[in-house]
Length: 477
Image (cartoon, rainbow, N blue to C red; front, side, top):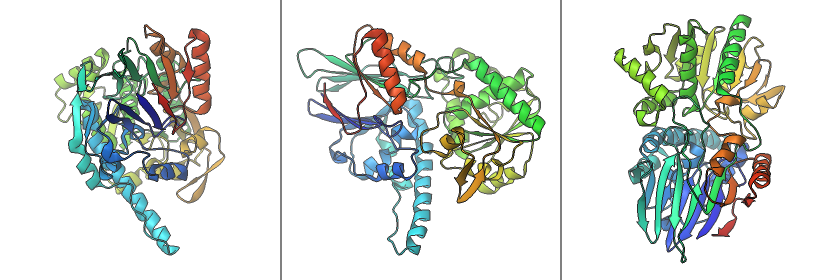
């Protein structure tokens, strides 16, 4: 088997791996790059290092755009095959890709106006909503834990990665010699004990493992400590007379944080709090979450079943307020005008908006109007990639450029990594050492220090061979 690391090897985003075996040519993930300023857009506009028309099929591990966001472009440039993923991921990708296409169009329109003033040609979007509509019929749903045969000595299975709704680890068996071999693509491995979703499943054996390393050099705080830290940040901010702003991805962290806030209200630790979800995409993703209770852990199942028995009129809009706590008031913001009105709220409110790394979306407008206010707080609950606005704020910048203006960073900044959807070093090690044999390990999807630290840790503890490939590297398995 020939394995080429197209993207997501020497970077945290842009995951894409090309495999060729027994006349089959296929991809595992086809994601966009994020962060690093204009470099990400440059990478996304580069020509694919393969002919899309010659790709037979694609496996998608989950719906985050850094793993799936280039699929419409792949189709537009000639891909005619099938896309295999879980049912929940398939359901999530429709609104996620449509939203991404709208962002591509908006960015292209803005760049075209700027180019016109310089006498330059117009900028085409990376892809359009029409491209999204063309790729959606190519998706084929696959069940967790069920073995499927592709022919040509190749079979595969998805198991639950516990990262976000529908996320999967891909187990792939191939036979191009006397002995059948197995390669496992971890996808993004979830953290144990996260709200709502089941803990990640673990493969039993492998000859090769392509494994994420996002948090390979650090440990997360226990969830309860992180919940306590969030509650404290909210209470102290309200006492100062400010608002709490939480940059969140529409998919995953939004649902977890709402679940946690509802729990704090139900326990009586927060009283009469107003939470504004300023993201139509997050509202849509929340509805899809509710449609897939088969992915929930037992605690979440019981809670949502109880809410259903209470007769919630609209599960999507009353996911939490229907639980009869009376202490959490959840508000959904749909239009841009409604979003702008939130900036008139000066104290006592929690505003959640995307994007999670502050690179786009409505959170940038909220930060522009409130990051300079000492009485406010910004709470980061997810990974901040290098080069992103979120990373600059977390790293202690005194001023940042937002929408063309220099804004002072005076609000209190909280980074609570215990809410991360990614396993930490201990959990990654536990996942890997659950394998009954000794595979060769390729560490991807991590910054330099994280991947190298995890690789050294694995080698010292187990003696396993680890390698951090670079984008564009080819190995023969």
